[in-house]
Length: 307
Image (cartoon, rainbow, N blue to C red; front, top):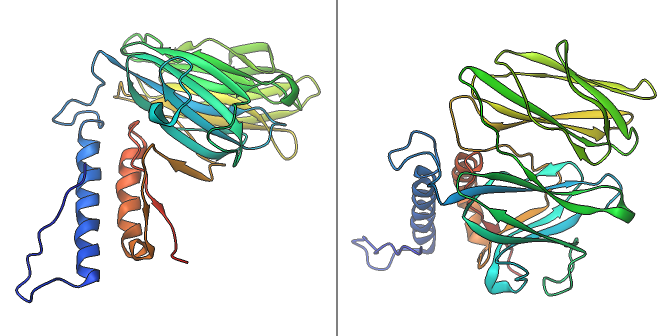
Protein backbone atom coordinates (compact mmCIF):
# COMPACT_ATOMS: atom_id res chain seq x y z
CA UNK A 1 0.00 0.00 0.00
CA UNK A 2 1.33 3.41 -1.00
CA UNK A 3 0.31 6.32 1.25
CA UNK A 4 0.74 9.92 0.14
CA UNK A 5 1.25 12.73 2.69
CA UNK A 6 -0.23 16.14 1.77
CA UNK A 7 2.20 19.08 2.08
CA UNK A 8 0.93 20.71 5.29
CA UNK A 9 3.23 23.72 5.04
CA UNK A 10 2.52 27.42 5.42
CA UNK A 11 5.57 28.25 3.34
CA UNK A 12 4.52 26.63 0.07
CA UNK A 13 6.17 23.49 -1.31
CA UNK A 14 8.03 21.58 1.41
CA UNK A 15 11.76 20.96 1.11
CA UNK A 16 13.18 17.64 -0.01
CA UNK A 17 14.24 16.63 3.50
CA UNK A 18 10.73 17.37 4.82
CA UNK A 19 9.17 15.18 2.15
CA UNK A 20 11.58 12.36 2.98
CA UNK A 21 10.82 12.63 6.69
CA UNK A 22 7.09 12.39 5.97
CA UNK A 23 7.52 9.40 3.68
CA UNK A 24 9.70 7.79 6.37
CA UNK A 25 7.03 8.37 8.99
CA UNK A 26 4.39 6.80 6.76
CA UNK A 27 6.67 3.82 6.10
CA UNK A 28 7.18 3.27 9.80
CA UNK A 29 3.46 3.55 10.52
CA UNK A 30 2.68 1.16 7.68
CA UNK A 31 5.24 -1.31 9.05
CA UNK A 32 3.77 -0.99 12.52
CA UNK A 33 0.28 -1.58 11.16
CA UNK A 34 1.52 -4.69 9.36
CA UNK A 35 2.76 -6.02 12.67
CA UNK A 36 -0.58 -5.69 14.44
CA UNK A 37 -2.09 -8.77 12.84
CA UNK A 38 1.06 -10.81 13.41
CA UNK A 39 1.79 -10.25 17.11
CA UNK A 40 0.19 -12.73 19.52
CA UNK A 41 -2.52 -11.01 21.56
CA UNK A 42 -2.91 -8.08 19.16
CA UNK A 43 -6.39 -6.67 18.62
CA UNK A 44 -6.63 -8.24 15.17
CA UNK A 45 -5.76 -11.69 16.66
CA UNK A 46 -2.19 -12.94 16.99
CA UNK A 47 -2.81 -16.40 15.54
CA UNK A 48 -2.95 -17.16 11.85
CA UNK A 49 -6.38 -17.56 10.33
CA UNK A 50 -7.37 -21.23 9.90
CA UNK A 51 -6.66 -21.00 6.16
CA UNK A 52 -3.06 -19.86 6.74
CA UNK A 53 0.15 -21.69 7.55
CA UNK A 54 3.86 -20.96 7.94
CA UNK A 55 6.99 -21.77 5.93
CA UNK A 56 10.66 -21.06 6.62
CA UNK A 57 13.63 -21.70 4.36
CA UNK A 58 17.03 -23.08 5.34
CA UNK A 59 20.51 -23.89 4.02
CA UNK A 60 21.90 -26.88 5.91
CA UNK A 61 24.40 -28.36 3.43
CA UNK A 62 27.93 -27.77 4.83
CA UNK A 63 29.93 -27.97 1.59
CA UNK A 64 27.43 -26.18 -0.65
CA UNK A 65 28.25 -22.53 -1.45
CA UNK A 66 25.83 -19.71 -0.73
CA UNK A 67 22.61 -19.78 -2.74
CA UNK A 68 19.68 -17.56 -3.64
CA UNK A 69 16.39 -19.08 -2.45
CA UNK A 70 13.07 -18.27 -4.11
CA UNK A 71 9.52 -18.91 -2.94
CA UNK A 72 6.76 -18.98 -5.58
CA UNK A 73 3.02 -19.45 -5.27
CA UNK A 74 1.70 -22.45 -7.17
CA UNK A 75 3.21 -25.76 -8.27
CA UNK A 76 6.15 -25.38 -10.63
CA UNK A 77 5.46 -21.67 -11.15
CA UNK A 78 8.90 -20.08 -11.52
CA UNK A 79 8.02 -16.78 -13.21
CA UNK A 80 8.27 -13.38 -11.56
CA UNK A 81 4.54 -12.80 -11.24
CA UNK A 82 4.33 -15.81 -8.88
CA UNK A 83 7.43 -14.85 -6.88
CA UNK A 84 6.65 -14.26 -3.20
CA UNK A 85 10.07 -14.01 -1.58
CA UNK A 86 13.77 -14.00 -2.49
CA UNK A 87 16.58 -14.62 -0.01
CA UNK A 88 19.95 -13.59 -1.40
CA UNK A 89 23.34 -15.14 -0.54
CA UNK A 90 21.96 -17.65 1.95
CA UNK A 91 24.92 -19.34 3.61
CA UNK A 92 25.26 -22.61 5.49
CA UNK A 93 23.50 -22.57 8.85
CA UNK A 94 20.97 -19.88 7.92
CA UNK A 95 17.23 -20.25 8.49
CA UNK A 96 14.70 -17.57 7.61
CA UNK A 97 11.94 -16.48 9.99
CA UNK A 98 8.63 -18.20 9.28
CA UNK A 99 6.57 -16.63 6.52
CA UNK A 100 2.78 -16.53 6.96
CA UNK A 101 1.15 -17.86 3.79
CA UNK A 102 -2.34 -18.63 2.62
CA UNK A 103 -3.09 -22.32 2.43
CA UNK A 104 -2.18 -23.87 -0.92
CA UNK A 105 0.74 -25.12 -2.96
CA UNK A 106 4.10 -23.33 -3.19
CA UNK A 107 7.37 -23.98 -4.98
CA UNK A 108 10.78 -23.41 -3.39
CA UNK A 109 13.76 -23.09 -5.75
CA UNK A 110 17.50 -22.68 -5.17
CA UNK A 111 19.89 -21.02 -7.58
CA UNK A 112 23.61 -20.28 -7.21
CA UNK A 113 24.21 -16.92 -5.53
CA UNK A 114 23.84 -14.04 -8.01
CA UNK A 115 22.42 -16.27 -10.74
CA UNK A 116 19.76 -14.68 -12.92
CA UNK A 117 16.23 -15.08 -11.58
CA UNK A 118 15.25 -16.50 -14.98
CA UNK A 119 17.95 -19.20 -14.96
CA UNK A 120 16.96 -22.82 -14.30
CA UNK A 121 17.06 -23.64 -10.57
CA UNK A 122 19.58 -26.16 -9.28
CA UNK A 123 16.93 -27.57 -6.93
CA UNK A 124 13.22 -27.17 -6.46
CA UNK A 125 10.56 -28.67 -4.24
CA UNK A 126 6.82 -28.32 -3.77
CA UNK A 127 5.33 -27.70 -0.32
CA UNK A 128 1.64 -28.01 0.43
CA UNK A 129 0.71 -25.46 3.13
CA UNK A 130 -2.27 -26.48 5.22
CA UNK A 131 -4.19 -24.18 7.56
CA UNK A 132 -2.45 -23.97 10.94
CA UNK A 133 0.54 -26.01 9.73
CA UNK A 134 4.23 -25.04 9.86
CA UNK A 135 7.00 -26.31 7.59
CA UNK A 136 10.74 -25.99 7.06
CA UNK A 137 12.10 -26.40 3.53
CA UNK A 138 15.83 -27.05 3.82
CA UNK A 139 18.67 -27.77 1.44
CA UNK A 140 20.29 -30.79 3.11
CA UNK A 141 22.96 -33.39 2.35
CA UNK A 142 26.39 -33.12 0.70
CA UNK A 143 26.98 -30.81 -2.27
CA UNK A 144 26.94 -33.66 -4.79
CA UNK A 145 23.74 -35.10 -3.36
CA UNK A 146 21.95 -32.06 -1.95
CA UNK A 147 18.16 -32.22 -1.79
CA UNK A 148 15.38 -29.89 -0.70
CA UNK A 149 13.59 -31.55 2.19
CA UNK A 150 10.13 -30.48 3.35
CA UNK A 151 9.89 -31.01 7.11
CA UNK A 152 6.64 -30.82 9.07
CA UNK A 153 7.14 -28.50 12.06
CA UNK A 154 3.75 -29.05 13.70
CA UNK A 155 3.43 -30.72 17.10
CA UNK A 156 0.61 -31.11 19.62
CA UNK A 157 1.71 -30.14 23.13
CA UNK A 158 0.09 -31.20 26.39
CA UNK A 159 -0.49 -28.33 28.81
CA UNK A 160 2.60 -27.28 30.73
CA UNK A 161 5.05 -29.15 28.49
CA UNK A 162 7.60 -28.24 25.78
CA UNK A 163 8.91 -29.96 22.65
CA UNK A 164 12.43 -30.40 21.24
CA UNK A 165 13.78 -32.10 18.12
CA UNK A 166 17.16 -32.47 16.43
CA UNK A 167 18.35 -31.87 12.86
CA UNK A 168 21.73 -33.44 11.99
CA UNK A 169 23.57 -31.14 9.56
CA UNK A 170 27.25 -31.83 10.30
CA UNK A 171 29.31 -33.41 7.53
CA UNK A 172 32.45 -33.57 9.68
CA UNK A 173 30.64 -35.71 12.28
CA UNK A 174 28.02 -37.61 10.25
CA UNK A 175 26.51 -39.57 13.18
CA UNK A 176 25.62 -38.03 16.53
CA UNK A 177 23.94 -38.82 19.83
CA UNK A 178 21.96 -35.98 21.39
CA UNK A 179 20.63 -35.75 24.95
CA UNK A 180 18.69 -33.17 26.95
CA UNK A 181 19.66 -33.34 30.60
CA UNK A 182 19.62 -37.09 31.23
CA UNK A 183 17.16 -37.85 28.43
CA UNK A 184 18.08 -39.12 24.96
CA UNK A 185 16.70 -37.01 22.15
CA UNK A 186 18.42 -38.92 19.34
CA UNK A 187 20.75 -41.90 19.14
CA UNK A 188 22.91 -42.56 16.08
CA UNK A 189 21.23 -39.73 14.18
CA UNK A 190 22.75 -39.61 10.71
CA UNK A 191 23.74 -36.59 8.63
CA UNK A 192 20.81 -34.94 6.81
CA UNK A 193 18.27 -36.58 9.12
CA UNK A 194 15.55 -35.02 11.27
CA UNK A 195 14.52 -36.59 14.56
CA UNK A 196 10.86 -36.30 15.61
CA UNK A 197 9.80 -33.87 18.30
CA UNK A 198 10.11 -35.14 21.86
CA UNK A 199 7.69 -33.89 24.54
CA UNK A 200 9.76 -32.80 27.55
CA UNK A 201 9.30 -31.04 30.91
CA UNK A 202 9.09 -27.26 30.68
CA UNK A 203 12.32 -26.30 32.41
CA UNK A 204 15.79 -25.11 31.41
CA UNK A 205 18.17 -27.92 30.47
CA UNK A 206 21.43 -28.47 28.64
CA UNK A 207 21.59 -30.12 25.23
CA UNK A 208 24.67 -32.31 24.74
CA UNK A 209 25.86 -33.60 21.37
CA UNK A 210 28.46 -36.33 21.02
CA UNK A 211 29.98 -37.71 17.83
CA UNK A 212 31.51 -41.08 17.04
CA UNK A 213 35.04 -39.73 17.32
CA UNK A 214 34.46 -38.17 20.74
CA UNK A 215 33.62 -34.70 19.43
CA UNK A 216 31.28 -32.85 21.77
CA UNK A 217 29.23 -29.67 21.83
CA UNK A 218 26.39 -28.30 23.89
CA UNK A 219 23.98 -25.47 24.55
CA UNK A 220 21.57 -24.45 27.30
CA UNK A 221 17.92 -24.36 26.25
CA UNK A 222 15.20 -22.45 28.14
CA UNK A 223 12.13 -24.65 27.73
CA UNK A 224 9.07 -22.62 28.63
CA UNK A 225 5.62 -24.19 28.88
CA UNK A 226 4.12 -24.36 25.40
CA UNK A 227 7.42 -23.60 23.63
CA UNK A 228 8.77 -25.61 20.68
CA UNK A 229 12.48 -25.89 19.88
CA UNK A 230 14.75 -27.24 17.15
CA UNK A 231 18.39 -28.09 17.85
CA UNK A 232 20.55 -28.06 14.70
CA UNK A 233 23.93 -29.82 14.80
CA UNK A 234 26.33 -27.99 12.46
CA UNK A 235 29.96 -28.15 11.42
CA UNK A 236 32.02 -25.81 13.57
CA UNK A 237 35.57 -24.44 13.45
CA UNK A 238 36.70 -26.96 14.55
CA UNK A 239 34.42 -29.81 15.54
CA UNK A 240 30.70 -29.35 16.15
CA UNK A 241 28.47 -26.35 16.68
CA UNK A 242 24.97 -26.38 18.17
CA UNK A 243 22.30 -23.97 16.96
CA UNK A 244 19.29 -23.77 19.29
CA UNK A 245 16.13 -22.33 17.72
CA UNK A 246 12.89 -21.30 19.37
CA UNK A 247 10.30 -22.34 16.79
CA UNK A 248 7.38 -21.24 18.96
CA UNK A 249 7.92 -19.10 22.05
CA UNK A 250 6.29 -19.65 25.41
CA UNK A 251 2.73 -18.39 25.46
CA UNK A 252 2.48 -18.08 21.67
CA UNK A 253 1.05 -20.32 18.96
CA UNK A 254 2.66 -18.26 16.20
CA UNK A 255 5.90 -19.78 14.82
CA UNK A 256 8.85 -17.41 14.82
CA UNK A 257 12.20 -19.17 14.88
CA UNK A 258 14.94 -18.40 12.42
CA UNK A 259 18.53 -17.21 12.27
CA UNK A 260 19.57 -15.10 9.28
CA UNK A 261 23.31 -15.44 9.76
CA UNK A 262 24.71 -15.69 6.26
CA UNK A 263 21.98 -13.72 4.48
CA UNK A 264 23.36 -11.09 2.17
CA UNK A 265 19.97 -9.58 1.42
CA UNK A 266 16.23 -10.08 1.45
CA UNK A 267 13.88 -8.94 -1.27
CA UNK A 268 10.17 -9.25 -1.86
CA UNK A 269 8.47 -9.23 -5.26
CA UNK A 270 8.16 -5.66 -6.55
CA UNK A 271 10.44 -4.13 -3.89
CA UNK A 272 11.55 -0.64 -4.92
CA UNK A 273 15.06 0.71 -4.54
CA UNK A 274 15.24 3.91 -2.49
CA UNK A 275 17.54 6.83 -3.23
CA UNK A 276 20.48 8.02 -1.17
CA UNK A 277 18.13 10.26 0.84
CA UNK A 278 16.57 7.19 2.50
CA UNK A 279 19.71 6.67 4.60
CA UNK A 280 18.51 9.36 7.03
CA UNK A 281 15.47 7.25 8.02
CA UNK A 282 17.21 3.85 7.82
CA UNK A 283 17.62 3.42 11.60
CA UNK A 284 13.91 4.03 12.18
CA UNK A 285 12.91 1.58 9.47
CA UNK A 286 15.21 -1.06 10.93
CA UNK A 287 13.36 -0.80 14.24
CA UNK A 288 10.09 -1.42 12.42
CA UNK A 289 11.60 -4.41 10.61
CA UNK A 290 12.90 -5.88 13.85
CA UNK A 291 9.50 -5.46 15.45
CA UNK A 292 8.02 -7.67 12.74
CA UNK A 293 10.89 -10.12 12.18
CA UNK A 294 9.91 -12.49 14.97
CA UNK A 295 6.27 -12.77 13.90
CA UNK A 296 6.55 -14.27 10.44
CA UNK A 297 5.96 -10.90 8.76
CA UNK A 298 8.90 -9.39 6.88
CA UNK A 299 9.04 -5.69 6.05
CA UNK A 300 11.77 -5.47 3.44
CA UNK A 301 13.65 -2.32 2.47
CA UNK A 302 16.52 -1.99 0.02
CA UNK A 303 18.64 1.11 -0.56
CA UNK A 304 20.88 2.09 -3.46
CA UNK A 305 23.35 4.95 -3.73
CA UNK A 306 23.05 7.24 -6.67
CA UNK A 307 25.77 7.02 -9.28
